[in-house]
Amino acid sequence: MHKNNIVLVGYMGCGKSTIARELLYGRPVSPIDTDVEIEKRKGMTIAEIFEKEGEMSFRDEETMFLQELLEKDMQDAVLSTGGGMPLREENRKLLKKFGFVVYLKASPEETLERLKDDTSRPLLKAPDRLERIKSMIAQRQQVYEETADLTILVDGKSPTQIVEEIRKEMA
Ligand code: S3P
Image (cartoon, rainbow, N blue to C red):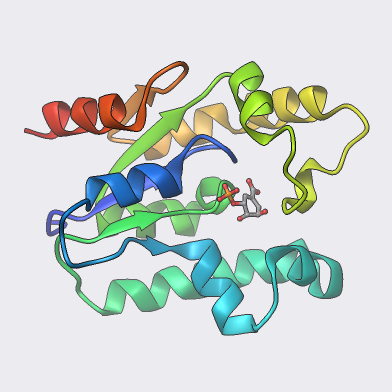
C-alpha cells in the first residue's frame, strides 16, 4: 500500500512540476523531481547527459533513482517524473508501488504551445516539432494510461483547477 504519495506522469510540458508544487502548496516540503535529482547526481544537465552518455544511460539513471527512492519508505510525498519514465516496465512497477499515479494528459497542440520556446529538451530537437510531439505522444499514450490510476485532461485548465480535480478524485 502506498503511503499517500502522489506520482505525476505525462509527456513533456504537461505541467508535472507545476502541479507537483501546487499539490504541496503551503506545506513545508518540496516535490521530488526526477529530472532535477538526476541532474544533481550527475552534475550535468539532461541535455549534457544525452549528449555525452546517451539516452540509455539517462534511462538507467531514472531506474536507479526510483529504486533508491522506494527504499526510503516515504509518506505524503509528491513525485514529478521525466516524460519517459514510464517507458520501462520496471519503472512502471516502481512508480505504482511508490504512489497513486496521475497522468496529466495534454494534446499535441497544447504541448507545442507550452514548449514552443524550449531548448532544454533533447528529444524535441526536430525540424517539425509538432510532428515529433504528435508521434511521441501517439507512441506513449497507452503506456501513460496503463501506468495511471487517474487521467486528467489538462488542456485549457489552470493549475488550481487541475489540483482540485485530482483532490476530488482521490477523496
Ligand atoms: C523526456 C522528458 C524530460 C526529460 C528528458 C526526456 C522524455 O522530462 O526527462 O528530456 O523522454 O519525455 P520532462 O517531461 O520533465 O520534460
